[in-house]
Amino acid sequence: MSTEIPVHAKERLKGLRTAAHASGVFTSDFSVNEFLLVRKAGFEPIGLCVGSCVYHVGIQYGSWNRNQELDVLSKAMYHARELALTRMRAEATAMGADGIVGVKLTIKRLEWDEHLLEFIALGTGVVHGAGHKGFRAHDGGPFTSDLSGQDFWSLLHAGYRPVEMVMGSCVYHVAHRGVLAGLGTAGRNVELENFTSAMYEAREIAVERMQAEASAAKAEGVVGVDIHEGSHGWQTHVIEFFAIGTAVLPLEQEIAPEKIADPIMVLSVND
Amino acid sequence: VIVGIFDRFKGPDAETVAARERAEALHAEILASLQTGRVPGPMRARLEGARAGTLPWIATLTPSELLIVRSHGLRPVAAVSATCWLHYGFSWTEGHSQGWETALERLGQEAQAAGANAVLDVKMRTVPIHIANSMDFTLVGTAVHVDGLEPSPRPVIATVPALEFVQLLEADVVPTGIAVGAHFEWMSDWRGNASGAGWWNNEASQLSMLWEEVRQLAHEDLRRNAQARGNGVLAHVNFSQMFEREVEHQPKQYLARHIVVATTVDAVRGVPIPHEIKMVVDVHAGATPLTGTQPHHQAYATNESEGAI
Image 1 (cartoon, chains in turn blue, orange):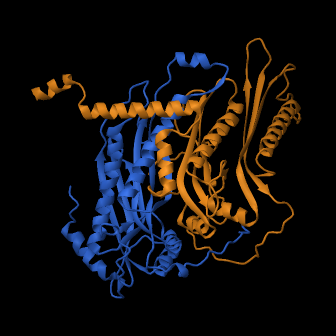
Image 2: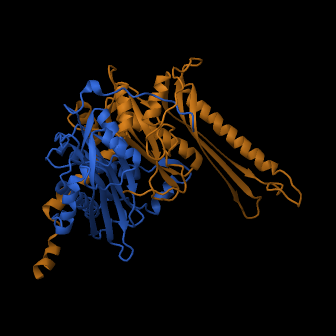
Image 3: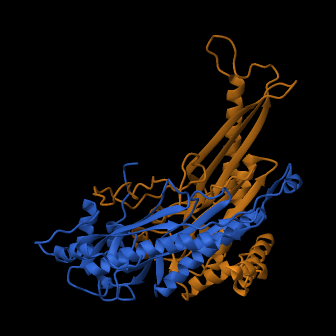
């Protein structure tokens, strides 16, 4: 499947471009606070953008007693997410959006086949109210960001704009411990250095890949990074390390630094 | 098809061999670094790149946290992390103390390599892989540099989110790290009535006493460990378990263990807080970060399973 948009979808999208005007209808999954803050930031939502991908994840087994990256699985998890994101972005481009905020990336296992995973990317396409094109990504297309509308506003007021959602994945097989290995450590608390180093290696691969994507997007930094581990129905010793965040660039002319308000600190009296 | 079958006997291609060799080299480097107590080469290169600005900075902070740290003169440098996978052949309870201490030490080294003054938003984590009698103790956080300060030889490690870190700094309180208090005790039930007996209400006083003792000693341990880092602790995580064990031809045995993990702070006592009370409406969706009560640590959340998105 290509990233070409079906004809009826295009027709639907054409109508949405006018949604910034009083005559049109826009679709979004914004909450009220989100909607108000995105507009406060000078943007208008124009339509929900969706991209999905059903992916058959190949098979790869780790050697019983070896720490190793399962690159077939790493590539599958990355490629499928990327396809979903690219398709979502293509919808946004067709709408004429300057960016997509609040992107949610989810994975669902399809119950009839353990190798099938469904990846969905969903977010709200926005345009700058005054037609400013300076918010677009480095390639001239819409920016993508998993930040909520509130976070989007906060980011602009911290002096940054989102460029691209960046991610890195590493599916890793952690070695099993030999039966004999346990004998030497009976009665003592000792570090299992082999396992520790497996964690370091897998996490490093994921973070490095994410950082490389941020460099490629010519970003200054990555905000809202989440580094976590998950298993998607693989063997017990197989785990995915996944790093995801929004690559950002400093604002230049869009909001003058003197206009960036100092936040007010509050102490909350509720728990 | 036949060519395809013969291909199998040729062995892996050059690219696969090179990738395998790279992985082996990385593995050896990490292992050697752990054994000699230094930051592994590739991590050091990444942290120093972020420090010099040749690589993008990485922050686990949300944009509103970024806003607040920037307005207080802090700059994120890199995401830092540390792990210690420990086998508790001697004591599970004391292993937790040892595991977190080791991870803390390593996190400090990464922060130092990043030229940081502090690590914020440090989360205590453990991965869902179960290997008998062992567990990983993992810390993940964001190393930050304070404008106008030289990099610290021992960066401050704060287990609170960035907003709370800044709130504490404004009140002249410095969060300094984690302190762990842990204690366990075995008790043999010589008289055979530790769990109580009969049809009347009575306190199982031997078990009460066991709990009292274990908890008091765990808190004493916490106090002792906290002393090296500050003059107070906040935000306890309390974790305790008690087991009964039947042993043939011997009295029943009871194991009680208690672990307390807390954020240590260095606070100037008796100084008024500079904030006024003002009513505000919070526009944040869902649980507000103002209160800081969202789950921040996952290591002792027993029935919370998390998956990658």
